[in-house]
Length: 390
Image: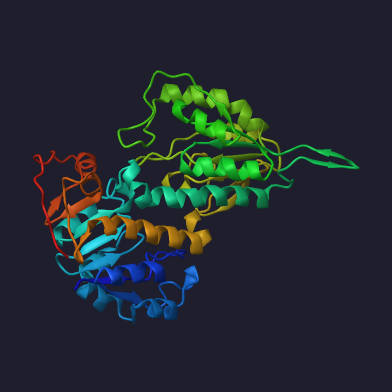
């Protein structure tokens, strides 16, 4: 009977946890036992008693729990101490940042840990229910608009009063991925006029269906990689994009930037001189600040005023909505593992597109083709079916 361990996230400012009472009850139905570190869910409004009621055991010694767990469910990549505490052959499910952090890949490989990276879940229809990047970005897009509204010294909707008409706020959204699309929908619900820029012409229809106006940049370049993610664009394209959206940004009351490229620094879309020309009281919310920021004046983790413009660079925005973010992330993990559990055991089938795409390390080998390519490793021979039971 495999043992699942859910630790408290130790990263500063983190409020989420990798399981809920509902998902724990489901693991137990699969024949697993579950241990939860005391206080793991407190910041997500989940008391230890709720986990216990669902059938989990509450433990205080995380190191001991790591050492006995067959499966560890986390949110952030494990620290070197957490990896050291895990037993050889255990399964880790968490964000790993495997494309950019070679050290953690080598550490997991060296400890013979089978690691599944939530950020590497392929963007295919079947895997939508497992896509934690999308679930968390969806919430971040919503929260970005709310933060902008809090800092903007005017209201979003048009308002007709006896004293005169208040014009609606003008919002420019950079990037129409999951976060950007949710930001469009939220800003429109609040009554703003919304314009949207994205490197992918294919998103125009989605933008317009939500009531936004698409700012189109002519290009012959492919804007998506094979996984459906935005890929890094040429400097020539980015220059054209900046020129086209410059006037839109300068005239905007709010700019929300969401452009991110997996494994790469965030593209610089809002420059110092653009900010300088924006009118006093404008707001920029930079959701890409954790990977360098889309705005050149953003400061990670800070809300600053530059040239009369408020620039919001909050880190880990989904954690500001911990209750919903935890619920969605926990379900993403459950959906992923649920497809891998066979008769109470986790089985790795590397002929499955999701398994081979998301598995970073397994039985002392780096499995993910994307991770191998990112770190200069030769491709693996055509994989035969490999199974591991937890």
